[in-house]
Image 1 (tube, rainbow, N blue to C red):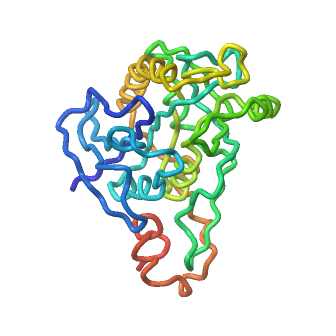
Image 2 (cartoon, one colour; image 1 turned 45 degrees about the vertical axis):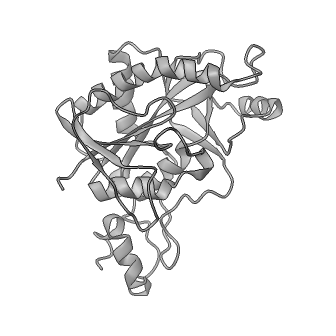
Length: 288
């Protein structure tokens, strides 16, 4: 199988990329179990890409049910260096309106008990995560958003909540007091795992509604969100397609060498099977 350097993760409302041609579905098994579904390999704007529907066919997986490790590890197995993800979010700021696009640059973690590392079980590692999104890839995505005419906000803090319920009014008000900008349920674990896998990662956040702090949006419904998602998905596809046409770039960012000084365990103490299992990620540092 030829290496695919560009990965796309589609979230709520973005279950396919209409422009992708020469399609082949590839089912992968990882050391961490099954990904959300097959990876759709194809050509987009002259580039080979791998597309994964985050929530599976028919949107059957809750955010808390996602096998984030398998999804990102599968991308690494395909040879992916860049992941463009799309996700639905609620807005915590009046100025970030429904149908706007946000390219966030920070996270606040409000999830509980989700596994968000490939390490453990005999291999300890601690990667830097001060800047959780690839800054070079985020700039590229923002530039693409402006080129396609999106109402775009570059930068912002994404609160990643557990769900699947939406926020209480007290929570929404608290997050606003922290200065957070948008809220969603999926992207933090992807970003952490992509960093461990030395993959550049950014999010194209699709604002579907104001979170419940807003007096006109205190009863968010799925119907409301889906209606806005359908419209936003077209913009997201245009941004992703334009960004793909600008890739790949020379990776001098911190993502490309995130593990260089992160592996703590003495090499001869790492279990042999673990080295084999994690070879796509650690192989250049810990040969099997």
